[in-house]
Image (cartoon, rainbow, N blue to C red; front, top):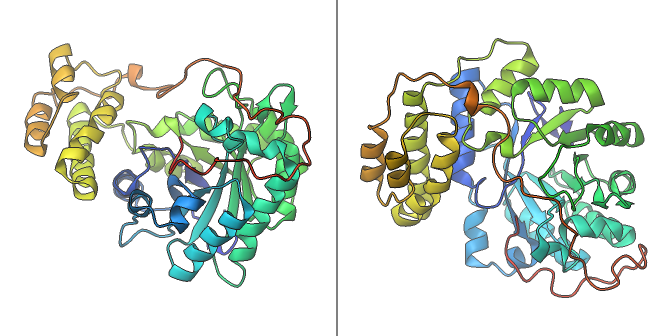
Length: 377
């Protein structure tokens, strides 16, 4: 798949996830794809950062855009509601060589984001949406940095925006578009509506269209591409606790046999490696606090014992993590119960929006205070 000047051997993208897709997790995914599939072929996107925080060089934001020395292409997801901030941030990325690819986030359904008009709420304001995309593209003109755009079906079933968003993004110079086939009101609940990905693919014909939603196995990616005609897939929750999924996706899409799923002993080794990478990135204390949530995903479906799970949920040092993992039975094969959906699902809910937000889709007023947060889900 070609995204601007970037050629990917595999049309698979790691979706940015707050608190997950930091340099440690991306490195682990790449290492496992190389070890199991013999290549690093997809696109691994870092956590979302806000344009304003990047331009102001907020220390935590600058740490979030850390890339490994051998990471290529370096992909950064940018959140913005303001064309001026967007231009400044994208220009900074280009001038300082911070990344090789910029993905724009218009899909976040988190209430603290949508209630200020950001994320999945913003494509309803189609002119402002177009101005933001155009600002990022204009800022990277003359460089090899493509800009892509990710969004949802819309705010809710009464306010679908994806067809307009895809058309506008392509017209303003985006190199590809990606659709999470849920509305903001769905959040992560229910089933993704793949038919809307097919509709977007028919509607947008000048740039690649990627599909996102309910890819938990390699077979799901093949099924989505077959059913919708999309050019590639974006994988989020399906890789939680399964960073080797990208190796399986790469093999499946290239027609190669997939590697045998890891045993519990192999999973334990992956958990330890993840912990080591987190400790190197954050320091041991914060790294061990961060690995705790991942352990629950890694051990999903495995017989591990309540006491050991509780101890791992409180792990404080790498030495303790190593010792606790030694208590797992290494010979247990990967269980059927460990497959399928994982991560947050929750329930649908009314979308929090600024007062009067749905009155005029052509209003270009920049939402007030929407870039105060530094990252957002």
